[in-house]
Length: 48
Image (cartoon, rainbow, N blue to C red; front, side, top):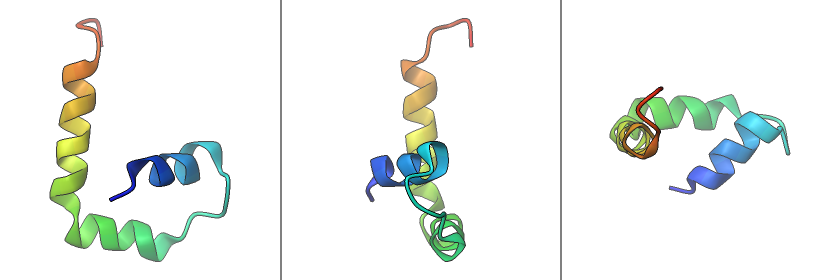
């Protein structure tokens, strides 16, 4: 899974968001997103 691509689409709006892809990630790859979110939380400062 290319999380940089997803981030670029969602945050930087380099291209239009393909909602079919967003749905597929949520439906079939949610554990990948959960792992990604956990990594972000663990790398974040304690103040967050």
